[in-house]
Image (tube, rainbow, N blue to C red; front, side, top):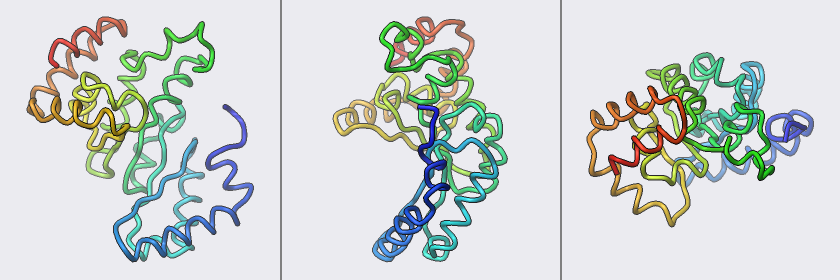
Length: 207
C-alpha cells in the first residue's frame, strides 16, 4: 500500500502514462473529460503530472486535470495543489487508513476506518477550504455513498460525490431535501464531535 503505485509508477514508466494520456486526449474530441493522478504526495509530483498532460495535448483539448488527495502530505499542501489544478478528488478509503496508520485490510483495525472519524472530517474541511476559489473538490470512496456523510460533505464544501450506482438515488434524495445552509450547520455540529460514533449520530438524525 505504501510502495510504487499511482503517480510513483507513472514516473517510473512514463511511456505507459503517455499512451494513456494521448488516448484520453483523442477521446476528449467527443466530449468533456477529466484525468487525475492517484497517490500524489507533493507539489513536484503534481507539476510533473500536469506537464505530462500538457505534453500529450490534454490541456489544449480541454481535459480537466486533478489529483487524488489520499495521503496526509497532500492534505497539508492542498492549497498549493489547487492552484495548479482544476480539481482535487478526496479518496476517503486510503486517506482514512493513512491518517490513522491502520491498514484497512486488517479486520482488527476496522474501528479506525469509520468515515465519520474526526480526523478525516477535519481533513476534508481543510482540503475544501484550501481549494475554495481555486479548484472544485470531489469525493470518491465508500463514504460518498452514505446519505448522512454526503450531507456533511456538502456542508464542508465538497462539490462532487462519486459512488456506486446502488447508492445514487438515496444520496440524491437526501441532498435534494436539504439546503446548503442546513448542510453547513450540520457540518459545524459534526466537526465539534470528539468521536466518530457521536458524529455519525448527529448526521444520521438529519437524514
